[in-house]
Amino acid sequence: MSPRTKISLSEDELVKALRNKEKAGAEALYDMYSSSLYGIIFRIVQHEEIAEDLLQDTFVRIWNSFSSYDASKGRLFTWMVNIARNISIDKTRSKDFRNSSKTEDIENNVLSLEMQSGNALNPEILGLKELVAKLKPEQKIVLDMVYFRGFTHAEVSEELEIPLGTVKTRLRNGIISLRKVFN
Image (tube, rainbow, N blue to C red; front, side, top):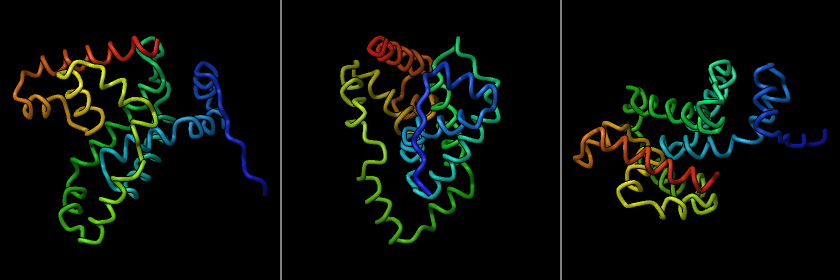
């Protein structure tokens, strides 16, 4: 059997296919976004097997809740990243995840460190590191903590000892600055 060719659609075509629950839409969604979403998930949970399971959960949730996607509120990728990020953060807060992290043996810890040093999500390859580096330092640290390290807004506020509103403002201003680069 010959390997399947990857499907790539424009964002509008993909949205239409997903709204119509077309098989080609699901395949294109996976082909186009699986590696990026996996990288985001792995960056948060830092366990390969868990990240793979959460990636599958993410695609199931995207498929099942696609009717709630509103293109006027943001890009498809941003909506999917938020789903992946929320699923990952929920997992890290779960009791079984915390318990398994405590009992992980030393061999798995070494493997986890080797995986972290790999290229699961390498911001240099995506060009994100350079773009984020151009932000103001206060925006850069908040953006890094929220999107790359999985902190909640409240956790960032507590960690940096700044008001929650300041965290949200810095994050919003950083995203607006990045959006200008992409548009």
